[in-house]
Length: 358
Image (cartoon, rainbow, N blue to C red):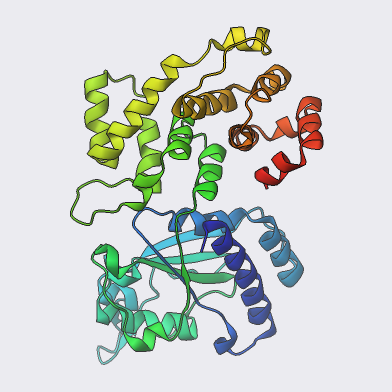
């Protein structure tokens, strides 16, 4: 499933679970989601995005009569806890004849939020036996999870060999599984919304093969998460040799070589000021890689003031895929651009282009 599809499912399930909790429905009616995907594919960020989802926040107000600005988010790495800590430490009572199990610190009682249980597949059978009670009965021993809290679980796939174990059958049967796959359009949308270096987006649009080549024996791989970190490294002001080294250590040697080669294409772009001043006569690159670099550069620089000449220039490129990529990236970085008269005119006159943007 695409990450956008996973988010849609989470949104619907969270709202439905809240409604069933409020009704006092059987806990068997609550849907326990388990997101499984490769290393660094964005499982955590996808779940975290639900904390500000307006439909969910509106549902909380409608169902519980409480208006909140966002859900709380508690990230529980299941494998990081000692099983005794997970179940709750036992302390002797005053009579010295019995024990009381303390409420685990990570188990929320009040408020509204998402308890994100990660690394489930990396945990042991003892962890799984304890965790099963939380999924099934929303409690650990005598301590119950607060009604305002929704459990969502996640783990890596067995084939990625990230220390994952096959879940025991009694735990597997409790979950509804969502298999997360990389989708380039969703990924580029996320990068644009989170101000990732535009050279990353234009590189992946031109050559995204490295995202799908995960080497379990390599120290570094090109994953959505590692690529986002590469964006930070690219802007440290390092010399070319040092940059090549750190990017290789972040996304792998082959991918870093491709990225650096793409970055060099930016030296071949037409002068931006000249393009804005004379969009009808400024030369258009012929190389496909340079065209994608051009799109990434223009998307990051587009404003309400220069929108019209940039669009005039881009309309001279016959293949509409370049205009579509540039517009998508630009609008994700600056949503006010959709109100530009020039933007409205382009989208209104070119129905095929509008379809490419959807």
